[in-house]
Image (cartoon, rainbow, N blue to C red):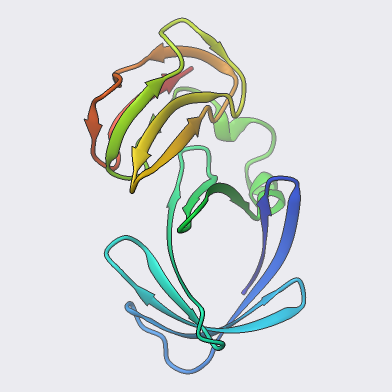
Length: 171
């Protein structure tokens, strides 16, 4: 399987090939990133995936798909937002149809609301920060999936939230 991943201004082409049997708990794979192959062992954990590379390096990764179709990816020392196959997705859902109607911004993982950056009635732009939550000792800024008006803000600063808890509604 081959796909494109956008992280910030950079787009990378990634191909994944199974090396033997893979099951729900993981397996061995060859990941070719921009033409450079890497053999990696992948196993599922309670919080995401554990990747062990052929050279012995290992990394734990948690990835959560957001309402806007982007992926919120947590690595040991950095959080980032990635878009997978944007052009393919836009061909299937042309224009702004993906962000039409009410958009619900939810907590991608359990945590604590550190800051609420908007209030009901605020006009927001695409990717404008809405809420900051702290999870796994890292602050994560959640952004608007569309331009619009904030219709609801059930989140409050200091509140503990579970994964999937509604934080902001944008229309």
